[in-house]
Length: 229
Image (tube, rainbow, N blue to C red; front, side, top):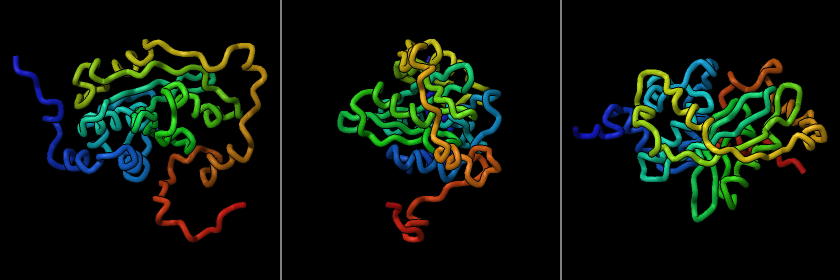
C-alpha cells in the first residue's frame, strides 16, 4: 500500500505557515506571538495540524509543532522530556542542533522555560539549562530528570495530523531512558527560587503565570527603557 505523504492533510494556508517557519527562531516567534497558550492540559494532546486549526498549544503540543516545522524543512525532528518531582508538571521541548551545538524551541507560560540558543555542548547540558527556571508555586526547584531525545521518525505518522488526541507521543517520551539531575540527598539543600524571579513570572497576571498576556517582539519595545546596570 502506498504511503500517505506526511503533510498531505495540511491545507494551503497551513503549509504556507510551515513554509515560512524555516529556522528555529522563527518557530519560537510563532509560538510566542501567534499562538494562545492552551490551558486545557493535561486533557489534550493536539497534533501539529490541530494546533494550527485551533491556534493554541501547551508545552508538548508546542514542542510537537516545532518538531513538525523542523521535519518540514528537512531538519532532524526531536522531542525531549523534562521530568519534574511529584509537586510539579513535566515539560517537553523540541531540541535542535546548529554547528554542533544544541538549542531548543519550547512553549510555556513561564518565560524561562521557552527558547534556548544553540550554545550547549550536549542535550544533557541543554536540559540542565532549564533547572534554575523550573520551579513550582512554592518556589521549589523541581526539575529532576531529562530523557534521551526521541526522534519523531519512531512515531506513527498520525502524530502530525490526527484529529484525535495523540497521547501515544507522551507515553513514548515517558518510556524513554531518563537521566537524573538531582539526587534525593541534594533535594533538601536546594535554595528556593528567588522572589524577584517569581514576581517576574507572575507580573500583571494577578499572581498567576503569564498565560493571558501576549508577549511582543523585542523590536517593538526596545528603546523605550534604559538598560539596567
